[in-house]
Length: 523
Image (cartoon, rainbow, N blue to C red; front, side, top):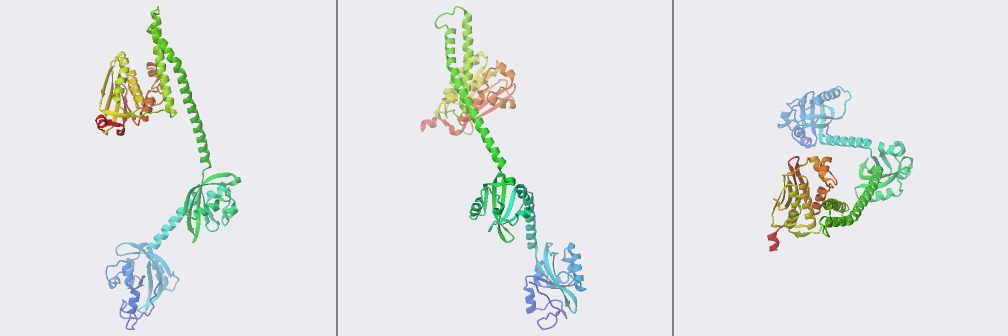
């Protein structure tokens, strides 16, 4: 809405505005103009002849309207727009064509730049040509339009560049309003062959009833995501898609934006991966079952060999007659014992890999089990000329499996004794942690390992290097089994090692697995 000031605007006494004054007199007309939402300005060249109260507020002028008339018009116009507005003014006062409505930037008194829409025409002021304009602040509107234009441009770029097919269709009748290049390439169509047609006419769905069910379900919600479907692409090739749909407004009509992602290759890869996984699991299960069966088959005759070898070397049923026979029997017994140890490790590993490792948890005194293990390796340590030490805190109970605790401790001690040179030391400790847990550790002064060698040693059948394998017999299953047993008991294994210095292996049990004996007795 605008107000045009006529050449003869009357004041409240009937005199012509401008004959003796430059500011509109008080009265009904002045009140009307000052009550407008728009600003009103009368100019002649760079001189401001009249402004209304709304314009003074719009330009944040701190003084009165009379003070504002003393400021040149160029003060308020943005420098980039002055030339254009001067050209419009010259055209109007000389009778040439000039736009009646246009936008320009004005600089307020506080320095803020605002956009105004101006509707101007020529008038007479005090008998001489002037230009009267109504001004309306359109800054917010322009920012909104600019934001919308940026959003529209961004959407159009995404629409055209995305590799996923995109379709915009009428929600009412399924008429296709627009498609992106990915859609045209997928179905081998031209845009003018697609726009205006319905999905039924295009026949792109492998299941003709799919779209109806899809739209009906979409009416219950604003969007749908990850909906599986199949489509007939170029050459009637069936492809699997996942659809994402959203209701939108396009050209004052409720529309459906649909995005389709081709997942055919993903499904084929997933199926192939599943087949590979099933095959690997079957092979692993067969391997584990084979190892378990073979271990049992080997242990039975091996136990007989060990028994008879022990009878012969100890001459239980009479003298051998030749001393070398006793020596041979002792070698058979030691080799058989070593072989039985390897077979037992393989059997345990088979149970772990097959998921059949069982733990019978009870509250046990770990010190009793650890002392038994110390006694079992004492002779071996003495023969290896090692100092075997231990320190146990004996006021705790541990929720664990006796058998697994013994196997963990024996494996730790055996490894430490095996890889420590004569004159070195091995120490086993059982200590409470600061958080209330319990740490079982074995520290040696052996050959040690680098970080990379630790990774190798943790793998089943891993040997750090060939020279080590030749010097120290073993299956390479010690650390993997210790880790598996610890995990079964909700504990964690850590290894700190340095070549030439030694190794410390720690098994840390969480607080909920530990109780003090005094508390247990009180309860």
